[in-house]
Amino acid sequence: MDQEFKKQETNPTGAGYLPGLAIDTVIFGFHENELKVLLLTYKNTGFFALPGGFVHEDEDINEAARRVLFHRTGLKDIFLEQFYTFGSKSRHDTMPLKKIMAARGFFPEDNHWLLARFVSVGYYALVDFTKAIPSPDSISDSCDWFNLSDLPKLMQDHEHIIAKALQTIRLDLDHKLIGFNLLPEHFTMGELQGLYETILNKKLLRAAFQRKMLGLGVLERIAKKWTGGAHKAPYLYKFISGGK
Image (cartoon, rainbow, N blue to C red; front, side, top):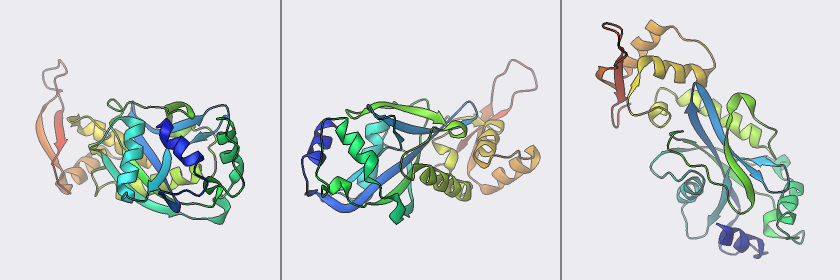
């Protein structure tokens, strides 16, 4: 990864990259009834940001997003969805970018390609919190999970990007098996309801929720969960592969 950053910084024209196009990824995890987001902190700046990157000229944009995702989590086969394009003129601010590069001892000319205006394609990813291995890089102090309810101040328009990703997830919740990567392989109806309530930020009626989920045809009941009681063990479920 360090060679990638050196290639970007020492390349004033951006040769080899698609001009004016960036990727920002909102990587969600679910743990202990909290929805979490993966954030970077850039070295010697105090800046918090979403993981992102640029698209190589010989690379599909979805391939570039998966490359960014793999470098941050160590995961490959996960749910990844393009959800919005961010192109407001107001998002162009060279100050934080100059500070990030200065922290590496690099002081670019004002016409350096990294300081140009970028349109960013937003992706959200849903990962198994227990399997992801957050990985910082040579320009980051850390790459850590933060509770969605307690985020630090983020650079540029990254707070807006997260809000838009969450809005999209809420709209897609029933139709794209959002829980597939956020829950363990086998889960109870109560655990699934807890995930829904966390994402939607509201309480749901248990009977109505169970009726709705069973009616979607996306769940397979597999067994009862052992709890030590004679009659209290809840059923376990799993998502039907390819179901909707």
